[in-house]
Amino acid sequence: MKSRSAPGPKEAPERRKVTTKSLLSMKQRGERIAALTAYDQLMAELVDQSGIDVILIGDSVAMVMQGHETTVGVTLEQMLYHSSLVARGVERALIVGDMPFMTFQVNADEALRNAGRLVKEAGVEAVKLEGGAPICGTVRRIVDVGIPVMGHLGLTPQSIHQFGTYQVRATTPEEADELRRDAKALQDAGAFAIVIEKVPADLAAEISASLTIPVIGIGAGPGCDGQILVSHDMLGLYTRFHPRFVRRYAEIAGEMRKAFQHYVGDVKAREFPSQAESY
Ligand code: KIV
Image (cartoon, rainbow, N blue to C red; front, side, top):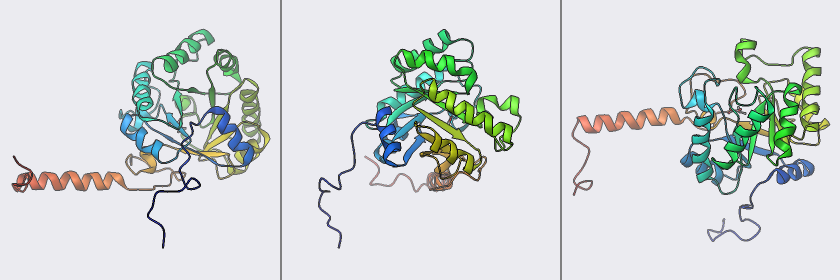
């Protein structure tokens, strides 16, 4: 029978703060990196307590919390707000904040100023930027002042109006080569990790093996150094669509709907509150 006593030193969950350096060591020793999104203090605290390595305040907040059709509408002020809530809930994971559309594309100075605000005002420990070779000068500029940068390649949702669809990317030899070049360029520009979204698994595995920095996949197969999912997707909380790469670990939306209906029924039937719930 399992002992019910407190875990011994060997079993104690690893509470040491995750840094960009720890992620690199994890890649070097072949330990997979687990990452999830969060947008508020409560969710961040719950995710952090799971032993997650990276918490991303994704611009996916625009879709899963604000009800937008795409991620392009979220503003820097909104990301500052959500990031500051998350930072309050996290003790261990590395906190990465997404730079919203048009906060880093105009020029490197503006990008640096905005990245600095996410770090200083909201408490993120790294920023994530979508794009490859064309933004490497900006990545270098941000890294050079001491702000770690995570790249994002493959399906880059901020460019949805250019691509027109959320279909799998880098399926032609030319696009695959471009992805390889972009990944290497981001590494050379000083990025500490790269998210690769919705590309063929073999290509993502090949790129992961070819880089020294960790590659974190989403819809990019099992050969990446880590995986990331949107928490609201994997919880079954955001159910507007269900891409094949999302494994649902719970069906929270259904549970919430049931609880809300139960409550409404109890109020209507005068079964809530009871004597015990009254003063
Ligand atoms: O915005 C987001 O949540 C993301 C992840 C899907 C990687 O960029």
